[in-house]
Every structure is written in structure tokens, then in C-alpha cells.
Length: 373
Image (cartoon, rainbow, N blue to C red):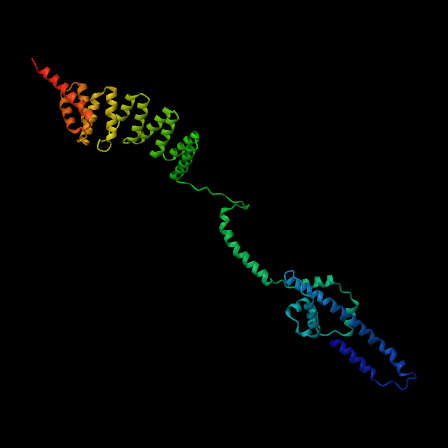
């Protein structure tokens, strides 16, 4: 605007000069050749300023697009900014200085204005020039995104150990304790047995026993399942491994003896039990089983020993005396009469008492007949 004022002042100044009186023409004729050049310069200046005003909002919109992350400014804001830039060229912001560096330069003369007017400036050239002079600074939104990306990067690096270079998740196997593996197989075996899948149940019991071979519960369950499926040999083998691993064990021997007894093999059952004979105080049923098997097999000496141990452990139990007296009687021992008499003092069951009384009478008669000459 200052350039226009300067041109207008120059024209007014020239129009006020006195005409040359010596010249023969009129004032209009004398001023006509001198007034063409200022009008041409004025027209060119107006054209240049109009182009600048038209191109300025486009450049400003492009600049705002860069700084505002793709959001185009409102038309009213662009018009207000162009008007402010025309009225106050010296108060442009630093961003505007970077977009249009010519604003801060001194006013150009009429020749420079004519040169600018004659040069056609396209929007593409202005855009490329503005982009070249722009200093790319991150907007507040971009800065926030960069900060969030940095925060997310730290846990990603912590989880990098669980992924390979291709970003594929790597499964790490966790080594379970033998007891945990056995428990898993036990649960599967019990469920399979309830559903009637006995073959799978037996396999699960085997797997549980393989990791915990000293687990007596698992071994008993496996042997019982095998015997229930009529796999007697497998059941006896399973139990035998158990009492071989623990020589003092009696549970596996008792199970083996019961299986052999049911299979009509009392001698084999007795031999299994005799390999480990615990105290009658701790295992009275063990000694009782030995006594019964010994009587069935005719091994009365072993039977007498078994009943003697039971009497020592439970001296008030009359049935142990009866069993011992029978074993002594079968051996032809004279001690049988005395043992029956002790049994009669402890037995309360009437039929058993009658049986004992008959035995006492018979042995007493035999003794009296043997004592006669």
C-alpha cells in the first residue's frame, strides 16, 4: 500500500507543475505524452499486488496444511489473515516469514514491480518454493504421538525375548515336577474308569507310575485294574516290582497273596507273605493271613508260630488260642489240651465254647487211655 501511495504522490506532484509557456500547445497536449508512463506503472503495480493478494491465501493454506497435520483452515480465518498481512506487513509471525520471505524486504521500485508483474507465478511454483523454505517442526499432536510410541516401545522390548526375529510368538515349555505329571495322569485315569474306558485308564495309570514309581496308591490302583480285567500276570508283576523296591513293604505282598489265593494258589501266596513278616502288633491281619494259609496248605508248624505271635500281641483274644490248639493237635502235641483250656476261658461265643469243650473231652480221654498200663 505504501508503494501505491508513493506512485499517487508522484502523479500529483507532476500534475501541479506549470506548463511551459513557450510551447505552442495546450496544457492537455503537453501533459499527455508525460502521463502515459505513470499510468502504465500504476496498472502493472495493481496487477502485481492483485496477484500477490490472490496467491497469498493459497500459500498460507498450504503452510497451515503442513503445520496443522492435514486440516485445512476455515475460509474466514484465511481472509482475515490476508487482510492483516496487507495492513500490517511488518507484524508478520515467524511462520509467515518462513513462508513468504519477500515480506520483510524493502519496497521495490516501479521497475521491480513491473518485473514482478510481467513474471507469471503459478501456484505450483509458489508451493514448491514455500515447501523448500519450510522448517519441518513437529506439531503438538505429532509430539504426543512420538511420546506414546516411545512409551509403547519399552514393554515391547521387554517382551522381545518371547518372540523371534520374525515376530512369531515362541512357546516356552515349562518343566513340571514328577508329582504334577503324575497327578494329571491320575485325574485322567479316574475319569476314564468312570466312563468305562478301561484301556485308556490303564495307560494313564502306567504313565503316572512311570514318573512316580514309589507311589503306592498308583501301583495298587493299576494292579487292581489289571486284575479286574483278568490280567492276573500283569497285576502280580506290578505288585512284585513294588515290594522289590521296598523290602519292608507288606501292602503289596498282601495284595499278591489275596490274588494268588483267589487263583487257588495258597502255597504261592504263603511264600510271598513269609518273605517279609512284620510284627503282629503292627500288622495283626498279616500274621492271621499266614496262619490261615498255613493251615490250608497243611503247614501246621507255621500256623502255630503265627498264632503264637497273635497271642503275644493280643493275649485276651480267645480265637487265637483256638487256632493254636488246632495247629498243635494236628502236630500231635500234648500242649493242645492246655491251649484249648485257655481258649475256653476267653471265648464267649456259645457254639465255639461247645466245640472247645468237645475237644477238651476228647483229648482228656486220649490222655487217660494213654496213661493206663
